[in-house]
Length: 251
Image (cartoon, rainbow, N blue to C red):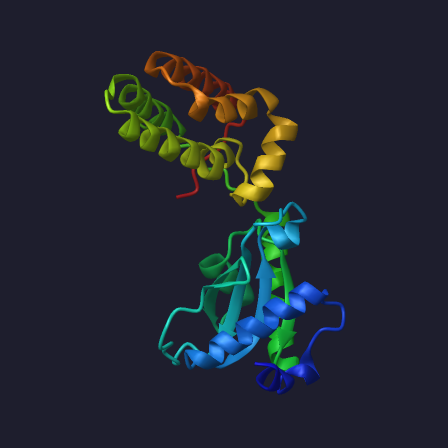
């Protein structure tokens, strides 16, 4: 693996940590194994946001020629670290803003670990800047579906949890509800871009402590009636958020 990595050393960033360099080496080696020629490697997620823990995934994008078909998966386990690797196409003719809208969430943060040459480094920098500019200049203000979410999504999950006699199915419903609320709905109701669960959890804890506490408590309760009561309280908070953050639909 080391000999393969030496081929790329000329363009390696000098401020990568030792662990980042190890992860980068493994990523490039895996690309070689599945016949993908990497042009740049971008790190994102909790490892960039600063709220990772020992077992956090390493979330990586590999910039590559879209015409190349991989012969196997890029994501893999490395010494107890899961490398969640996705491919993004190198499309130099595409407008950087259009590119970010298609491939990135506006709230994402990045670090370019490596680029094959300045051309691909410049392309990576441009699309990252476009993503950041989009995040700072725009805010999603889609309000039209908030009433639908309250009356259909929230109420449906509440009924499911309250009436389901099977503990496993109830646990699955609660898990799906938590995923929706923390990863999508809170940001939608407050007219913000979606954040990753790692970054979003910290933001909820800081700005919405009551909601955060209820979300943490929900999967720990054993009685359906108690879970239903917590979900009703969560719904009430979202009703207040809908009034506090009105917006105009941009569909």
